[in-house]
Image (cartoon, rainbow, N blue to C red; front, side, top):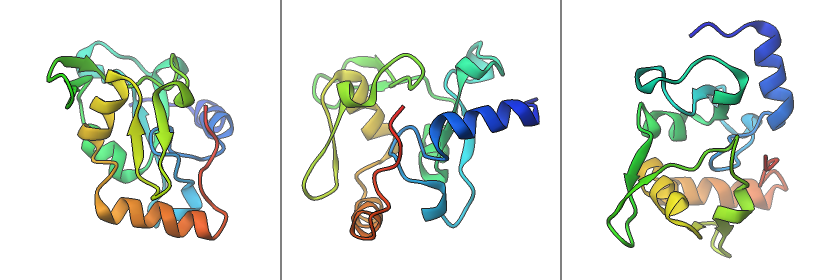
Length: 139
């Protein structure tokens, strides 16, 4: 990955240092948020700013080189949510218990693959919300 310092600065400013998948802010994470290739290089993606987003370590590790997942509702192959092309609020909804609901096939598939509603992650979001630190910026 060859990302310039100015490109990294642009990405961090654009997202307010927030995971573009689960909306956790970088200061909540004990590990620095990662730069993620929305479409991995192995699938033809590049290092352009339009193909890069910030992802918390949990989301980034779970996503890996994937670009699609089965929608758990229909069991159909579905492309993952793309934060550069899609609006978070059109695809996700925050439940009262701080779990994230998928409103579209892309979102349901993304939630499943990124394991966004694992108990530990829901608790982490709830605790951050209680401190007034969640959700972060939506892009």
